[in-house]
Image 1: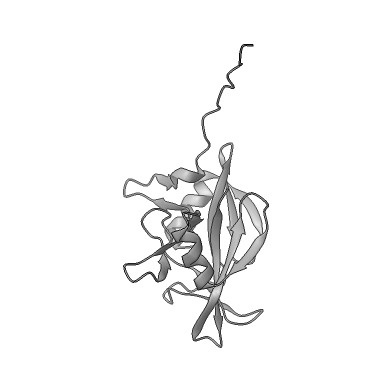
Image 2 (image 1 turned 135 degrees about the vertical axis):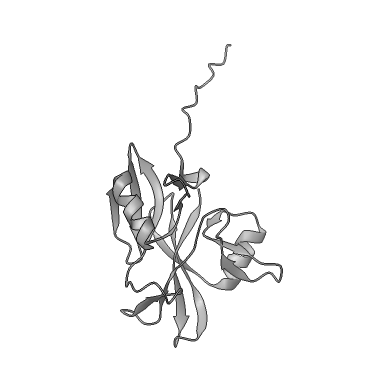
Length: 159
């Protein structure tokens, strides 16, 4: 189906080595280099949270996936947010809906479900890095691709 960006991986805290992505179809975490991501996006693969700028460089997709921050992994155990004014050591991405609960994936790959009220609070304090945003009127706006699709009726073919 699609991939959702979770973490940026840096080599020696200075050069981007690649990204860790959540594969929605299999539930696996995969690694991709910037070069792989550029090829995938240019081949019309869906990678949520990342897009290409005018110079064909990988940037956060703040427009269609509301990706406003990302955790940067510098070693196996050391992580910090790209947006330094966010003093946290873990961020969450909205990856789907289960009834009236929102499914979250954290930057250490833990999955959880939260209510609308809890998600609203997490959005207010900046713990959500992508997949949803808080509108000015206080409502939660979820990315269109994550919304449950209307059930499709299968057409019965007549012989």
